[in-house]
Length: 276
Length: 325
Image 1: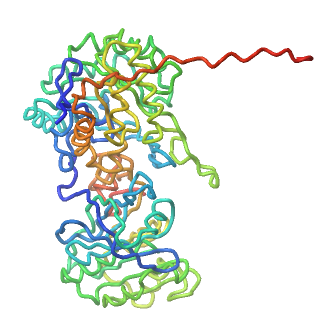
Image 2: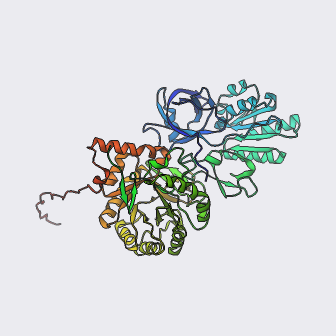
């Protein structure tokens, strides 16, 4: 059994930012008491308020941005008890942070063809740093397409910041209130119809499970490789509770056991390795 | 600094804090966050004869005052435990004489429990076995060995026959008379009672008409169960001569001392490690500080100090004859 990742720390961190974002989300900035090495995009932290406002069990959140050696930002959608409690945080409030956790996105390969990042709603969280790091790793910005979908434009969080990254951004909304009128898979199909099918594309997706399944099915149809960043219920985040099981495929790299742990084997998986 | 060391079933422990099975990994995975020697003992996740992939998702759900789980004893079986997990555990154990290693065993039959114990009996460095009589997430939650004192005794006696290692019997709170189960375990040869496992519980998403756990019901733990667990530990302590290891909802040194006061020689901490996986690294110091503030008596002197005062009856009510009643 793998040990808890050696760089995981439990800290009391101070909130320095709570910025409203879109219709129902916010960006939470926290300052840790000690410096961290630069984080791989796609890794996550477990967060809760130190006081009684938060539930006992912390909740997992992808690192949205690493803005300094001790400063992190998390994009949080207000959903249930845990996120409502975090939403009440003000500058100076204390959070308990557990992290960094998980494996994050794979190494970016500059020579592996265009990269399509396909996000739905709050699933954009691991892509801000992911795109930045792909560019830093030598992937030309014009080889990166960010397809970002939501039910309506209020669920396309920080769209302008993604545009500022200098990559092609294709917004898609179910109601047509912003960008392409349709879902992200239809937007991807439209891209192929209008520009022709590239020989090779690497697809990375994060969003609601049905959307990711559709994106992976699309990638399979096109013969593209794909990776998913999953969100599951988690009890501990460090690999000890076995609460975040994900089924594995018999032919994949995780085939030696019927289930993987989303927290330590993921949350990013090669789509062909898992059933979700 | 108050002395926290304890004697448990013939073993010397640096302090009374043990991890609760299933909440701290199979071996020593947690050592990046909690040093091995900061605990009195490390209790493994349940080891079974055959590999078990565990239950379907969702396996966990947090409720207003606690935590539901239905993991289903996911583990890779005793072969894997012995070959892949134990070496690193035993290496830590060899360096730390006052932190014990407890292997928690799970079986479907009395024979299976005994076979597992026999298999590991000669492993030097496993200090004790904890016999999981009470997992609510297997066998359909029927708890066959923790609801009948005779069957609990049968399992413990079967294991006793094949090993001289200390045996902890982990009992269930899902009974009317946990003390009777504890007596059965003692009669079968248990050296300590772990009181207790999770309560049976459930939560539902009524809008969708679905349970929150894939199995419907599961085990309920965390802060909300502590009064129930404390009562179980207290009843067991009064019923048997062997030590009690209190378990259920402990989050602080104050909580530890409540279990000690009702008669527990040691405690296990579980769900609190999900809230903060490093909590057990600090709890020993907090416990020592707490006892210092209370005068510095050693922990062992606080065991069983609870006295329930005799009740003074209220004055008798005057009997009244009410016509027609």
